Each structure stands twice: as C-alpha cells, then as structure tokens.
Length: 169
Image (cartoon, rainbow, N blue to C red; front, side):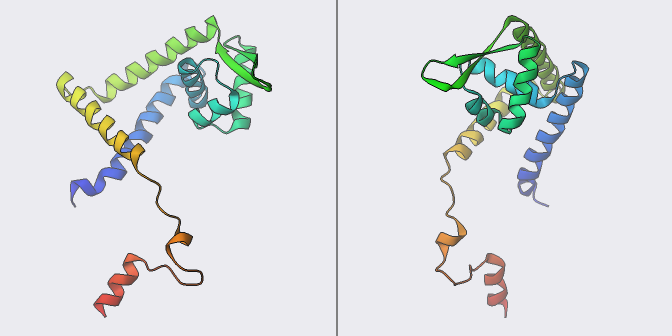
C-alpha cells in the first residue's frame, strides 16, 4: 500500500494516541481533557465570553458551563460582567488557575517529548514546519459545495464509483 494513502489515518490515529496519553497524565491531577482545553484557551484569550470559549475549545456550551462552575468554585477562574453586553460574562484566570495551567503545560511538554523522542532537534523543527504548512493549507481551503447545489432538483448525484461502473460496462 502506498504510504501517502495512510496520511489521513496517521493524522487521526496520532491525534488519538497523543490525546489518550495526555489524558492519562491529566488523570493524575484529576483533570479532564475538556478542563485542560478550557483553561489553555482561556489563558490565550482572557476576557473572552463563555460562548466564544466554547467555540474555540470545541466544547458543548452546556458542558463548558459546568466546567467553568467547577473552576470558579475552585478559585481558578473568575466571571465578570461584560461592559458591552449585560447578558454576557467575560472570563479571567485567577492565580490558582495559573498554577494549574502550568501543571497542564508541563503535562503537554512531557507528552510531546515522549512522542518526539526518536527525532533529532532538526527533524522535530522540520516536522513542525511541515505540519504548520499543511495546517495553513487546510485552513485556506474553501468549503466544498453542498450536494444539493451540485445537481438539479430531482436529479441523482453522479458518484465516482457510479461513473467507473458505467465506463466498465
């Protein structure tokens, strides 16, 4: 099998393995991945609304409310009224949250070092450069047209497999 054909599988499975290893480490701190993600994204975006944090961290808004309630009870985060929208709350990290964030970042560093252990510093730098370029390309791709916009109403969409079957008969 052509190695490039495994590209999507490798990306997905590497993400799964990396996430699982990070979660194993986070359990030692009694943290979940969504808690870690919420705190990390908040650190990069202090003053953000709960709704926007949910989008960035890809956490269901109702789940995020529970996570933030817990973090607020622990003294990690603070909710403040948004001066521009009285319905919204802005989020900020408090000192105990920064301490937890440092532990989360350390877990990430240890996990990352473990996964990159077989690479030289040069290979690691090259890998990151390549992944950043692939990421930028992926982000720049225009959305594909929806299936309904590709065919006239009532007309079936011709699939590649259908076209191949038609040609071979």
